[in-house]
Image (cartoon, rainbow, N blue to C red; front, side, top):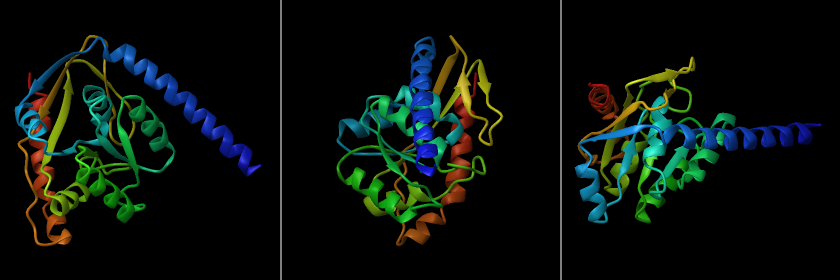
Length: 218
């Protein structure tokens, strides 16, 4: 019985992922994308420097689309909703590491460090997978401290959008919306220990708020 229930859940998640990915492609091709301060990211990539992207969980949909097929490794939780997001991310050309700050944290951070050391960009949603919204868990900062890769904040805003009633107010830009993607300045976390790196989370939380404000500026 348990095996049948698990198989049904797997099939349902696969179907939802397939439908969601298809709808995303149809919808996203109508968006008008505008970038703000992307030049530092482009320069680091041109120099062969991997980066750590930091974005809020609720803005994941447009940001995954904008950064599709760029070889980015995304940290995604292991719970059911995470499986759907992971499948969509893979369909957009992303790699995945499964885990979170609350489950399998050490293994997840090790996987992200290894991705950086393999010269791949990585992405964290520091308030995921379950919030509270816009609360900065320190995983990205610890990976920066361990690898020397800079953290780049990014945020998305839309001229017209739906917001789900979920904890993160998940953002879905409407057809033909203008989507603004804003990037913060690269910051390498220089700290003597992982604990000291984690203590910088409130600072990055404030900086994320500034980046979100830029993305939502008309």
